[in-house]
Length: 372
Image 1 (cartoon, rainbow, N blue to C red):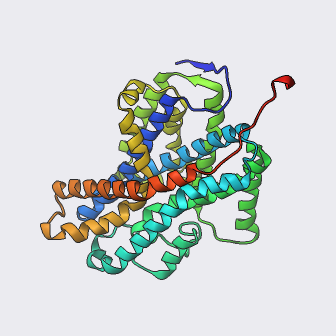
Image 2 (cartoon, helix red, strand yellow; image 1 turned 120 degrees about the vertical axis):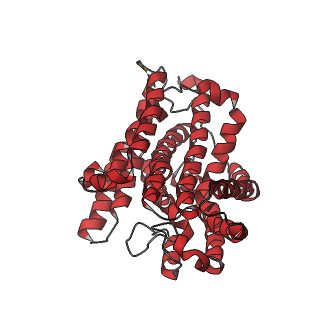
Image 3 (cartoon, rainbow, N blue to C red; image 1 turned 120 degrees about the horizontal axis):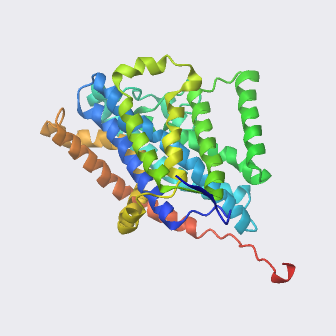
């Protein structure tokens, strides 16, 4: 297992790594959707906890880690490449990526919750609260899951980590301003500690936890930029992720919940994601062979992550008369339905938004050869 110093430190991801990360983003989003679909289709029982962690929580951690990794990587490239890459430009590029689709799905979810959700309150995924305007307001002002009074809103319960990421993007504008990752992180933690312990604002533990995971992802870019890490480590990372996913089962929930919070299971999940994201791809030949599929999954990841909850309501409305519940056929039908609706959102909303963003002009730096 070799770790070799790289010749360059420009922060760029090679094309094969981009394909791998596109593929993983799509697969992670699909697994999160699968994790939430299972307890919706099958009667609630102990296996719900098991299955949600198999294909839900584990891969949300991967999303957040990867978000920090990619944001810092692109920030480093853009700071060195563009003259006018400042806080305004950074925030426009980041927030224009997530906000339009977010509010469109929020309206979509609210409409479905209002007209449909009363029909299946007994099937609501655990942790997704019943319709309540205060929770809906929390989604609008991006405080769901950050302040305890704003609980997870209905079928958008899974988007709480997206709200975390919204604030992480805002925080990271300090890094763009100072151009120093360690100093920026230190100041941000001081601000959060001040808000929590001096002003007494009741911020949730998960908000701090996922910010730490996001920061570790951001700092990981320094390792990726400096070292070439063996493909064997990449392969071992995949095996470790599968092992840790299977390890989390109902009989271990009480053991893990009794551990000190600093030993949270989510923090241990960073290890396989770290190994996968930072190393040379063991399956590069597959990603290159199925290039279009990787890009397709990457493009679909955000719509799947956002709209799979509302799609459960819509799927219930369309397919309830077919007695799909407690059957694997029903499970497959709902998953395919989620993919189909997500594809429509990708074509009709996501791609036009991305096209508009691409028209935003940033001036490149021009280096004089005489100054060298």
